[in-house]
Length: 115
Image (cartoon, rainbow, N blue to C red; front, side, top):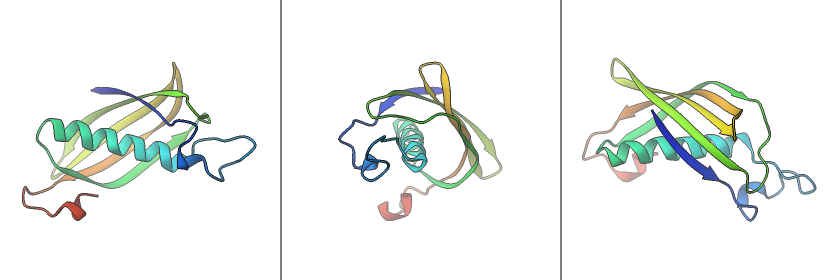
């Protein structure tokens, strides 16, 4: 299991237009943070992966500018694919949870295919 702290500062472009009078972090931005955390953690261990699917996502609480988030995820393997169960917390309150599926990339895979 990995645990990573993250925040989206108030000046982040994610908040542009997502609601000017009451800015909240879009769900897509939260998922992007989780993806970056998973890919980054695997790269530390010498693995290059690509996220190929997201399932069972539930959003429970809005995230405001500068809120400190805790991203937690664990990996399991299913045949040739990897699966990551993740949870995002605001303090101890659940914000988001779900599953991300990924595949391991070959060492000679071009950078643009790692997205």
